[in-house]
Length: 415
Image (tube, rainbow, N blue to C red; front, side, top):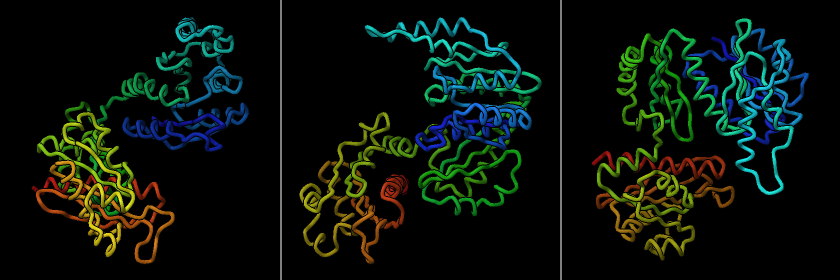
């Protein structure tokens, strides 16, 4: 089945809102084995929207739209599609009841549901109404003349649950095959390097397919198989995964779709019975934030230090004056003393430090913007890695955090 995506909203064209819906729907369609050849973003203009709809109906089996289902005059998606399909709008009583219930539930003195909200209860005749449990505008599914049109509301907190509850089962029911995928998550290697090492697998795999996705300082590989049932699909994926594991094994940190790198680190530390602390300069608490975002982190993460100034590094972590005067705060020596000092101060098994120049100011020819040292103290010794990421301030900090998390992972696994 060929699927076409149309995202509606002038705010998307102006860049006021990041189009996360397109990313989400595209990824889900790929997982479901659906072909998506076209995506369009169109503003809240009836003529241009109608042109997009008619063009899509002429070349695609299914159209998915997001946005334009609300109560205001510029919410036109439903009306334009209904007209294009030669249908009429009729009132959906269940949606009317849900609207009154919703507004009665949230009403305040002097406030009530305005009549324009009932616009959301007008739906194309013969459609399937997709009940929106997280908002007021329902989704809509229409099958007509061999075409399918699915209209979803724009807010991601409404669109995602609707897609999961209604669209995924709908597409799976339409397919004679089961589609199953495994996500292989890598860290410590770039996308181009990873792709080069498994070039033969990427180029010669048709079923299962292997698709790489670049994340911030990570690489994800999705292995997807089509088969008669899930067990057969899993069996098809297994040898492909083993081949990838043979080549990229040391960089694989998870095959769990939901598990993040910090999840994997916390689980590893729990498994080993180890505790950890952080000492951050250039990352300013981002590393600590990633770790404590994991449920159960309190079992292993005891406390952290944000030591941005030289005085704080000396006072809180015991970095020596000689080190700061001779080598500077951005140095291998300072990173090592920060990591050890943090572990000693917090009484933990592991101390991890970050110190660098995130920019855009402060760089020199000897120490340019993007230069970062990451230190780790563990098992009585220290190790420091040097990185240089000539990018923007926030990306430097985010990439440093990922490298620090990977350093924790690889260090602990060595023992």
